[in-house]
Image (spheres, rainbow, N blue to C red):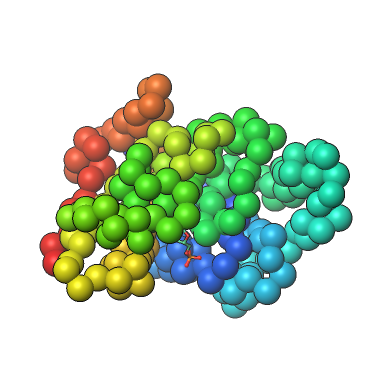
Length: 225
Ligand code: GRF
């Protein structure tokens, strides 16, 4: 059953790099497909293109410098405490990791349990971690894809919200496959945010139940070549 919110869902995006998924969410909000507002974009990299994209759209862009925290035994947790303060200050309801190249600690994971999503360029649970597209080719997989999941303490391990599959073609390189997958990422991430905004996601153990509407139960999308 979808829930109509009167105010847009307040979202923060954590990104370390080019921010194309951030852009997809911004575009989906601006075209009215997603009922949300990006309250802040936060990066651990001062020169992240994601911050520039945020600025262009009048979204607060925040660089949280990891340097002062490194070298401390509790540095990663202290960094996440600083992030948590910022998220609280901006009244953030949902956190999106979008190419955020830092492992989040239980400090953030617990505070945003079932309210923090990540996008990963593989059909999880295959190929968590780095170089997912390259590994899918090397394994001789015929299908690859992307996954939006809730974030838990294990890397790329949380309950799966949506997946999209693409074929792997004979001539594919990690780059050509990554491009094909990325096009699907840009569709399913905004869609997952909208499902969350509509209150249609329920976590039951490892499973995410998507209620109402015309979604296939598993949220699967398979794109033709
Ligand atoms: C994407 O491939 C995403 O799946 C992975 O990191 C990449 C980020 O790309 N987690 P972008 O910064 O959103 O363009």
